[in-house]
Image 1 (cartoon, rainbow, N blue to C red):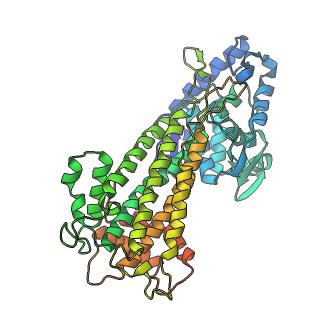
Image 2: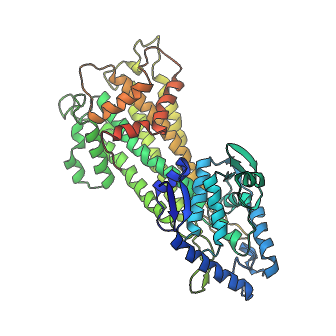
Image 3: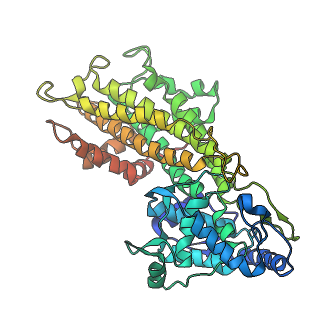
Length: 507
């Protein structure tokens, strides 16, 4: 029941999350095996008949004009992996490594790579038994694929490098032995097939995207709680307003907010208390909605990329071996630069709502939401911390894809920097989660200063879940610990899952 079959064409984001985080097993679909075997036969025929084809019996990159003899093909593929494994930086988390391994196996399952079936099955056996290669996060230019980090993925398959197994980092050979997995000897085309693809940037990107989708829903919950706490005007969310400017994300956001605050007596109507709200409340559909539209664009790109053949050369069933550029990461690079910008905007507007909650010049609540201000600072410095994260996001949101540094003696003269785009987006997502957690905690504090009013059906559940873990701040306390508790509710899905049992949210 918890086994997902790969055919190279039908993998979903949900599948990736279930395999990366929840231990679902993976196997190659029987129908896909024929294509893999046929593709491999074409490679064997090329080698046996001494035909020249790039990456099969030639060198790589600038060395593509160097012919490699049949007897040297195995040595060529091994040396390719050893020489290319030169990434740096922190190690990717286990979940991202699992995502990378899965996506590479899925791409190879399409049957255009010329790799033996047994090699793909070794990669999946590692995934299923929990042998996770140590992959460093920096070192890819995002063209010719993620060559260096993917080489780190392959090292334990050869009995080299390092891998995590049962919580322990071991030499690759020992990790494979303990898991009962035989190491492989790569032959013609196979080393290149394993590392010439976009699966590191895409594998990490899937997780950034999944978290971003959840953050967009959480941002609507945060905005709805702040709207209630500040006795905001619901009229701006009227469907008629959205219909005359029919951006999909805008309409969805307004609908989410109205569903969350349904039944509330906290919120007001236009003219009841004031004529207009500030933009951070009134323009939530327009701001959150634009980010939703951007993230949905990224999702469409990722859905395609997860199920694509991205190595080079590609082996077609009529025997053609074509050198193209599917390894170029530009679609991912552009998309995740866009995602980083879109998600950073969610923190921008959230931090401004936080300011509106704690600044008594902008509301009718106690200054900094402190019960006894002066003696207590309340939420004063939470805004400082949020502002610091928002400022950092502005630096991180600078696009990486506009840069290109030629490599391989100018043979690879335009590169995407897609892995940098993705790594930055992961950092932005983490910062945004913290800012939203701070806003949600402040909104709940503000709500507790009002009496005799009723929250909406969705916001009431969000408030209840927060208060199960984070109490009203009566006296100054170690604040980061309280924000940590609130952030964990966002990170582990408790808050979103709980609210969505009452109100279904969309992006």
